[in-house]
Image 1 (spheres, helix red, strand yellow):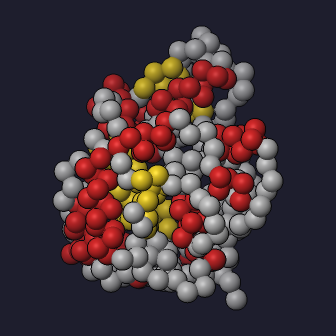
Image 2 (cartoon, rainbow, N blue to C red):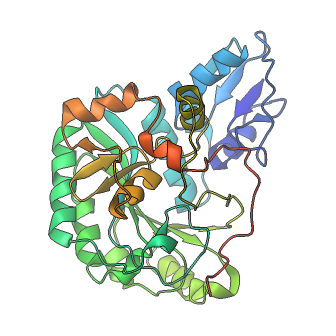
Length: 333
């Protein structure tokens, strides 16, 4: 038996299930042989069960099962592990007509770092600005009216704590009844008002960029003091995908680029528009021309299930799981 997904949930499953190893799209977490064995069961610990199931079937794996029936036997030791378990369960054992695993909510283009290879294209903004708070709140309200359930809203930038309205925005997002979690991504440079994060729905992801993340330990101590779920993340998965340039791909090439992209379901909300990935969203915000976005309406958002490439894919270098890793957070001069 194999476990697909070598992350936190997979590791917890490993403690209770005798298995022969991990399968994963990320080579650092497990192998993924292209000649699947039909007689070897695979337990999928990824929240994206349907997509992984289809991928494994295409590779020849036969007996594929979701992890959620086993999750009740896992014993989380941290608030973050509880969040990871509940996310896996929520995403695998759901029967909503329109369910979204996660949606990025861009609240600012400004960042306290100047990373030359930022995958969200912050290095291309010459005059970065904060997003309009009223527009953000209206977009979230509209999205929550149109979909059945969102497992998590991810508050991002830039650096979200640079937008002084983040307490109001986070409070508003936490009040949405059909949103499971509000996850905030920060680079560890700015100490937030911890009281603004004190909600059972809030999870804080702090990327540790070494000396650049000068306030990381202060942030960690503040989160611990209020029992706020968090994780310190090591930036070991950066790839060369922060450039913008015409690739001149064929239709088949565009489909392959989209299919193999690790961010093709990183849905993003920005300025009254719904995007399928952050590259596409920021490509549009930067004014590079035609982009791919959907109106925030139920019928339009359902098009995510039939989309197999984006126009923006032809300007992205691609984000496959096996792309060579690069040094993270190199600062522009």
